[in-house]
Length: 256
Image (tube, rainbow, N blue to C red; front, side, top):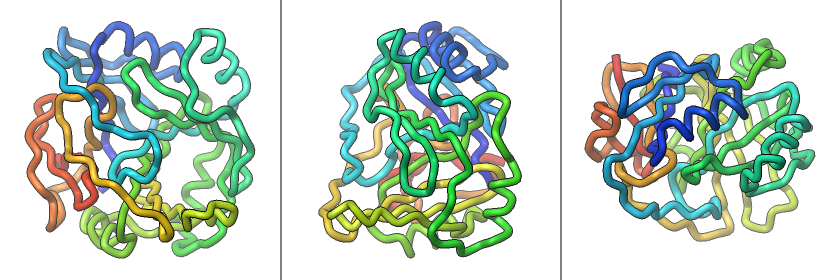
């Protein structure tokens, strides 16, 4: 049951539409006074205007369990980075060549959502489902930025694999981070044309964030499916969707 959309709470709808259209070439499909839907090739991005907002408790240190970032595949990292920097967009990590033989960078949208751009076909260190990897690589270089993944830090990889296995995700592959003293590993759970990028840290303590529905930034992932997995905890509503949280606090919806 693949990822259908990513919901982001915004404080200025026009500003966010302009940001994602200008820097990521996302295409506006629909808008109202309170929300907008943009096409990101393999899923949609749903911007939800906050009438009132809470202060976000998101900590961008990767050791806070739950949501970490939204990733897009690109064929042209350097000119996109140049355009973002020329516009004064804040970066979390300047471009670098990363494990897996890809070029990556991290920056922030106007409401603090961490976004990643990835150029190149990721060369996985471990392959658990060859067919899923081959389907991933077969997507090739995108003509315009393509939604690729949502990243999450978890406390128990096996439990996470079982939870999202209830939505049809399989453990596709993994990347080691041998130079990180925190015991950092990345695993990819796959369904359809996008992944859940799962972070684990065997040598570091994780913190827990209570789910938020009215804070600016990333709000939820919407999966296509019939029902939320066992273990999901009800959270509330975002953009008209009933949302729940997985055991590590990733807020999501499951819709038919």
